Length: 393
Image (cartoon, rainbow, N blue to C red; front, side, top):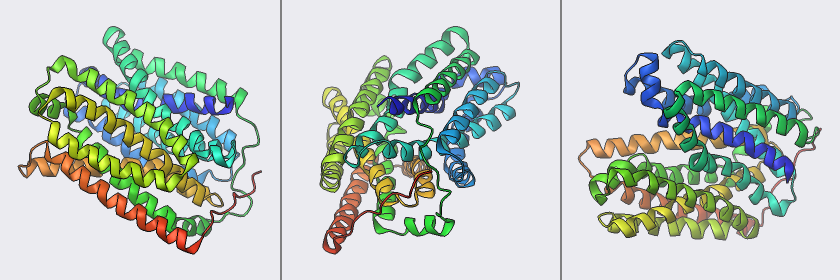
């Protein structure tokens, strides 16, 4: 359990630095002498770094000891935060953020593999949930705290605190993560990595990931104007609703981990259907504050509850060649987020209202139910079994 806590601390640090920029964006824009829309590229640039650079770095470093790689990625994070705190202009800040994002993408891929390798097979879901909870807890605690620090002492102080958090994660992993966590040096070729992706359980899980992101971020990207203009909430109440959504997400992560360890596919199919129903309910109750807030809490919990078994399934079915597949998990999520936000923007520009975003999300979830059900039936009829893990060094 202690090694997983060390991995969680680093996941929390990476998650906080990814999302806290939104909380201090106006201050960063002012401090670097650019407009707020221009400063927004610090968000999209980070997502691109994860999606593109993360898998490439993971493949380039696959012969390294996983503990050494984790420590190196945490060190890159720590140095990157200090450099961001000292960044003299926007261009250097953007490049530094992208560099940290590359380390972010590689970290989560490697950390997931290490986490499932440290526990019994029936505990894999909870191991994945603990690492994934670093992202949800960062939204509940890290982002508000980082934003408050930025408001009081300036945005550069936020990055210095992130630097200190990076030092803490390095110390925790140095002491708590076992030296022999394995590498892929023994015999896993790039061709084997690619062939592992061709297993139907893997590529169908990536489709489920994409549908999940459409169901989550198509609406979440525009949740604030939805709450203000459709639900009619006061602006001061919106942060509390988002906090409640984050609390639901944190609970959902561990619920999803428990269900993944119990009956992965039946649980996943059920939750996908429940999310489709929840999004339909959001459409129906969006003009009414109290039921809308309750629905958003449930929606947030289901989103992250679903994410845990999807990731567990990918890691389980690529256990013999996990480097490329594990690195595609954070990449896939960020590509899905970008596509979902773009789809939402296209619908709004086409004249559809904010309520339509939940309808599209519900349709995406029903597609996911059909894909998951077909995949599960195919697997059951052929009585296929997941591969054994590659021997660790």
